[in-house]
Amino acid sequence: MIVFAQHQRTTPDLSGQKPSRKILVGPYLRLAREFAWPYRVLLAVAAVLMVMEATLQGSLAYLLDPVIKSLFRDKDATMLFILPFALMGVMIVKAAVSYGSNVTLARVGQGVVTDLQGAMFNKVTHYDLKQLNAMHSGHFAARFLNDATLVRESVTKGMQGAVRDLLTLIALSVVMFYEDWRLALIITSALPVVALYTLTLGRKSAKAARRSMMSTGDLATHLSEVLDGRRVVKAYRMEERSIERATRILAERMKHLMRGARARAAATPSAEALAGVGVAAVVFYGAYMGIHGTMEINNFMAFLAAMMLSYQSIRNLSSFYTAMSDGSAAAARAFELLDAPIEINDAIDAKPLVLADARPHGAIRFANVTFEYSAESNAALHSVTFDVPAGKTIALVGPSGAGKSTALNLILRFYDVTGGAIEIDGQDLRGVTIASLRDQTALVTQEPFMFDDTISANIGCGKPSATQAEIEAAARAAAAHEFILKLPEGYDTVTGEAGVRLSGGQRQRIAIARAILRNAPILLLDEATSSLDTESERAVQAALARLMKDRTTLVIAHRLSTVAGADRIVVLDHGRVVEQGTHGELLARGGLYARLYRTQFADEAEPPAAVAE
Image (cartoon, rainbow, N blue to C red; front, top):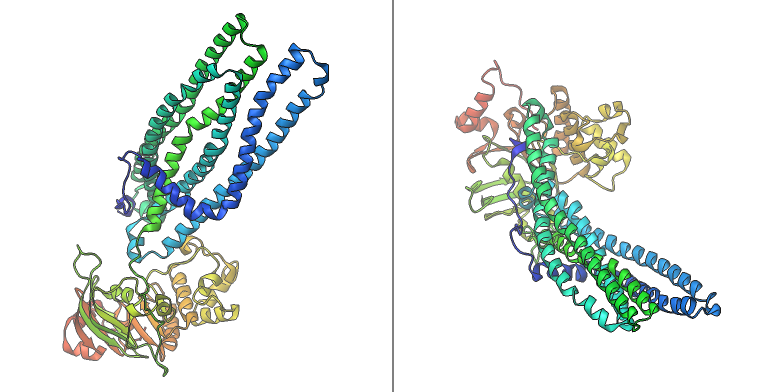
């Protein structure tokens, strides 16, 4: 069943690996080189602001020394109107600088992730059909949304940790050493212990993050399948089984998320515990030294303030590595997607497809074509040879799985032949640019796809520069104009996801209008009238007959009556050409075509009249 299909992962599963330095640092170096570099000016501004913020934080701690000494010990009235306002000024400037650095850094983080998402979308849209079929859209969606969020957070926290928090800690450490270097040494000696513990938590968090990302992709895949296959789910009463599988995926995802959450949550309590030990040590030492008269109260209070202010920076740095580990794992997955090789490309010396000057043009030739979808599968086509003369209509018929749709896919270079060649007007398709090839073709498939846009936009995508009058003319030719006008918004009616608000026949007619509007010299029709009622089918067939005039047309049809008027019929069976000829010749020959024809009309007293599709 579609809802329970298991999709093979196309990217390495790193969930069981330890986050080595290469895994952690490598993605960030590339992220900085390819996506953060355009924001280097903003990064420099943010860095300067964070340096100022760290310096001002240290100044706040240091100012307590003269405040207590001048105002409370020496009772210097002249400083009463200076030091309080100095403290206020430092805090106001620090607040403004902090706001500026946070906003600037947020702009950088959002910009980096937006550019990364744009690059990912660009790459995915250029993927080969084989690559798109190999990975479910749910996994793509998870990488675009969930992984991108982790990258953004890690970029922001990484910059803050590497600059603001680290420099703040350094500035406050300077104050502490200035006030009492012996006590400062005692406090800072505990930092390596915290760093080691944080690294351990980071490894656990990174491992949990990678596994939760895979579970998120599985969840998105299952949700997409249930929604796309809703009719099957309802018809076969698969709701409970769908819920059970979703529950299992959610439980698995929850397990990994909680492992990561526990690792991240442990970082803050460890910093708090260290702070508690530090406060106790400072109070004990300061009180002891104060009792014996070797430490002044102003030195002690400035030291204590610097230590307490450093607590937030230590707390932030304690979760720094875990955040970076999560972001590194997400960035690595994004780069796996970006680095996936695309097999169907323009050759280095590819030239635009040039059709013959005289019309009709666009003759197609299959020359001993062999094709395999993968090295492990059987060949879908075996040494197939036939011609589609310019301006003529050739029909491909045969049982299901005979290779008819594969032939159309090869003409459009959705795949490349593994043997032989396909030529258009004598030019091997592998030697022409993909864009020029597809610009000369119009495709109508058995299951037409509608974008969640207006009917005008769905027809107009066949020719982006088309006017509304041209769109409506194409709709009339496809017998779609009348039903479109009856819709609430007419041509501005939104079709819904995959055209769900339209019937199958209506979607088919819009797809045919799209092909008519494209006005390409080569037509590829894959069961183009299969979803139409009898009356609409006749109207569309008449429109197609006019459109096919003087155009090279390759038709696939299971209903043999619709191709009986083709100039030539090529019969495929198990990927091989077994017969070629006109409708009458093939019937007289009594081969596979004649058997298929008789089988289709066995229950009819008289076969229907032949009509060219």
